[in-house]
Image (cartoon, rainbow, N blue to C red):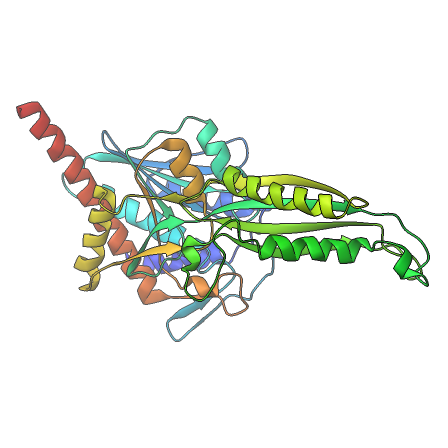
Length: 377
């Protein structure tokens, strides 16, 4: 199994598949999973869905086949595989596929495992959103992202992608005191949003996971060297902790903008929400969390660490829409995501397969034993 698993991952990593260009990777997964014995299909937007086993429970393993742009040469050195997507997140995806296959072959296994390889996670989450519209149902779900083989991610912050357009009157750059400079006014507004006291700010005494944070990610403005800038667009990435909704945080931002406009009546400001994802956290007392944690302990002989991450993942979207126990787990160091040094340790990848497999077997056993107990009573 280990040789097959490493070959499968290596071949998958050899296919460059940035968001929106996943077709070759999807064709590879469809073909290889059919050879393994999965019942496989591809949906209208390119998600590849493989099914193995039958009956209950239904366990969804969801990962993404796309990567960020930027090809990295594939190489294997000292027990590590270097390639774009090695960590984020073809390593976890390949591990889930191999684990599903291994679990389904165990004598007495009863349950259906759905492995969803989705598209565009790194861009628009189009793949997982389409999956939800198809009415997919499951009793448990695990999303494959790099948590580190001994860690289980149980919470992610939410996100607001916000565009703010400012307009001012303009004139010659030789008389800047006569006009409001839209670039300068935009930065003034940004400073007020970033440093707002109307919601918990990020400070040394606060946990980043429990703080509202904002990042200025894009500025577009200015027309010519001799003209006072009169229009600008800024894009903000706002992360929302579990104690708030995105609507509550955006409402506070709108109040900041309204106050700013009152103080700057000659400046036109328009805020547009481009996208939102709600924060999500699974109950750490959930049977799914318990089973996965005990599987980590069994395979690695060490306790699992439960993580809360300041990023945002497709787990948020699945968890909110499907209202089911869901966690994120997978091999790899997430600090290597999107970097030029992205790589995965082969040993950790193989350990993750064993953890996934043990989790699948324990979830099926737990579910079916519970049903038997209910029938007896």
